Structures are given as structure tokens and as C-alpha cells.
Length: 222
Length: 120
Image (tube, rainbow over all chains, first blue to last red; front, side):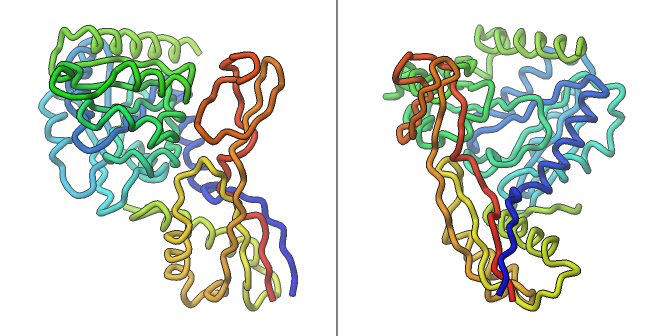
């Protein structure tokens, strides 16, 4: 009988590849965003809204994570945006190697912004670094204001939280005040945008777009 | 497409553990791995029973197929960068209870790590 001391992170292999992706983003001055949230919270709708308002100014690519279908990728393609579909075939999250494979099919040099829309899930994707600059997690009003503390890891790991479908607030018992307070005790520096992702001139969407533009500029100057 | 990690993420973690087992026993005179101790922080999204189940499946016909997975939990501990106050967090409040600073660092509680293995 012998003891072997190990002390190695279980996701070490994923993290190594995530760092390779991060290096590629840095060398090509690309801002990479990992977009997360439950199924149906409005990730793709928000993405379409943002893309249509940024595509004239920036070169953008999207990586779409989905269990089985190309439905979201088809929606993005309609905006004439480069999109790579990753089907996880039952897998609950994207990992760094899947993103690396999608990146290898792109001409990174030309890009300013890559948005990776993860599989709809508030649990698993939180543990997997794919090399992004930051995570945005969207939460929609109908999911309930108790969700930040029920899924603390994903909000703790995110730089931005979106409270989406804010226009249906009067028909629900969701308290923006409670959700915001919980989000900020969990992550005091979290940026929170209240949005209506279906509206182009929505104030929250406009603020989010301005935030992303600022981040693209920062990344270019590094 | 190649992928390290598939299906529920506990399966991905089980695969990660098995990869570590292989890399630490390769080239060594090891016939069997009997025990694997895993550090699991309190702020990680792992269902332990699901991880054990996944590992049992994935480790079939390997030197680790009969290995017992031992869970060692680590509490979520934060430290205030402003006043150095340390405390265990159970309510996910990342604001210092002493000085109300939000300059908080996590000292432990996010680990998913193989600590050690017992081998024959």
C-alpha cells in the first residue's frame, strides 16, 4: 500500500485549454463574452438585439451551444453574422475544447467580438472556464426573484447580470429590489442591467450595448 | 467533435479524476488504485452521489475500477482585504461583517481537486 499525494484540480485539463483560448483572444484583441442563463430567459433574443445594433461597427462572431438543434444559430445567421454551432448531444455545458474547435474554423484576426451562447442551464456551465473575458448571466422575471441565491455560483462568477422581461413585472410577484439586493450581497461589484430584450431602444439594452462597446475598446488598448 | 466532457457535468468531473489517476500512475508499478480522496469546496455545484455513480461507470476495466472515492468537504471561507477579518460563509453574503467592505477574497470553498490516492 502506498500513498500518492496529488493536489491537482479536476478540471485542470479544461483550464489549460481555456488559457489557450484566452491567449488567442488576447493576441487578436478580441473581446470574448460567455452568455449564460436558463432555457427561455431570452439569451438568444438579447443576442439578436445586441448583434443587430453592433454589427455595422464591429466584426462579430457567435458560437452557439445547443443540445441538439441549430435553431438558435439559424436566428443569428439571419443577421448576416458568422456563427458556429456546437451541439453537445445531451451535454449540459460547453467546455474549453469545444470552443477551441469552433475557434479553429474562424479567422480570428478579423474579429473584434465573440459571443459564446452557452447551453441553457444555471448550474453546470458555471464550473467550466472557456477562456472568455467575462460571463453575462441572464435571469428572466418569470423565473422568480429567489434564483440568485439558489444558483449562487453562476452569479458569483459573472461580471454582468441581466434581469430580462422587465416589462411583464406588473403581472408577477417578482421583486426587483429583492433580486438586486441578493445579487449585490453575493457579488458586490456585479453590473446589473434591467432589460426588455425584444425592444431595440430599451434603456437597459442600450446601457448594456454601451458597456460592451467600452469593453471592446479596453480590449483593443491592452 | 472531440470533447473532454460530456453529459451531466459530474461525468465530466469523473473523467477528470480518471485522467489524473492515469497521469499519476503511468510508468509506476501500480496494480490497483484503492482509494481516491477528493477535495470538494462548499461553493461548488457537485452532487457527490452522482459523481460516485459516474466514476464507477467510467472507471470500469481500469486500475481504478474498485477505488473508493472519499469526499473531503472544505468550508467556504472569505477574507476581507480591508480589515483582514476571516469568516465562514453560509448565507452567500460577500460583504465584510466587521467593516462592510466589499473587497472580499475567497480563501477556500471553490476546490474541486484530487488530494491523494492510495495504491497497491
